Image (cartoon, rainbow, N blue to C red; front, side, top):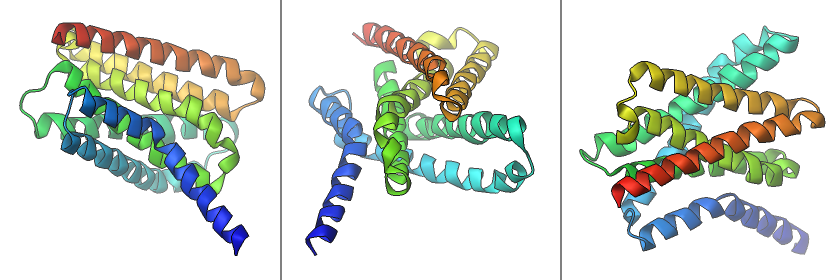
Length: 223
């Protein structure tokens, strides 16, 4: 009885740990008056919806992936089945969360929506890994969470934020493909030998640094 209770508490604390970045961000944003509590809740729900949508599309692609072997299977899984689908769906969710419901948003509030969706997506995805392969949750916490957030912020900024709109649609599309490429390369390196961890971290660092820069630009323009 005590062992079963202990196992359940471990799982509950693990789930709470998966959502800790989302909780911290939502509370900070509300306290700093960047957005409201309903805005944060809707962003969280859109992140959950993006996980469901991505999982559904990935399930439909499974028969095609099963026909591939070797490197073709690995490349398809990392770049198409994971990176392309996840980043496209998260971008759509950010748009539906912010642009459809709100006719006018500051860049900072808009990018806050991207952070909410990215953190929510990563949190729910990590719960799945916690229940199926808990040994890698900590690694995903320090790598996959910032990856999803940074990629979502950058993709959203390229398409919707005011300081990037003047760049044109072609540059936005190419930048989005670059984000997908870095996400896919990160997935590929993480799926290979431990020696490929360094290039995976380089991809992650590039996305995170660029996302911080975009956030800083949007904040300065808002202020």
